[in-house]
Length: 95
Image 1: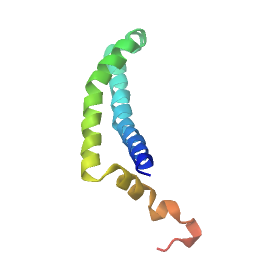
Image 2: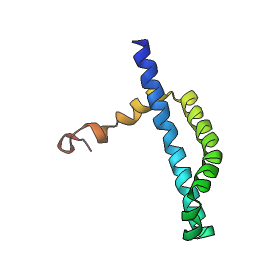
Image 3: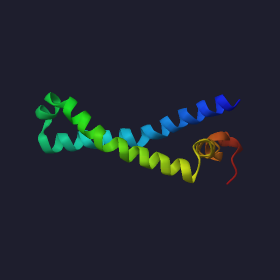
Image 4: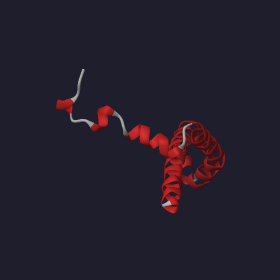
């Protein structure tokens, strides 16, 4: 059971890591498109990808570790999934 818990925790940690990482990668590509132009960005997309990963990966790890230490990964996903707006049907809601 402990192995399953560790695997679920690792999977949730990776999912939590992807959120800021993908957001920062998208922002770097948009910034590259706006500053360099479309032709330069399309021809140099591997360089843009590697340089943005080099900057955004450590930041994403720091954010993910902060969330893990403050809330706990499994507890955070439990909180997110146990919202009354998501779990109760519309006709049974109060208020």
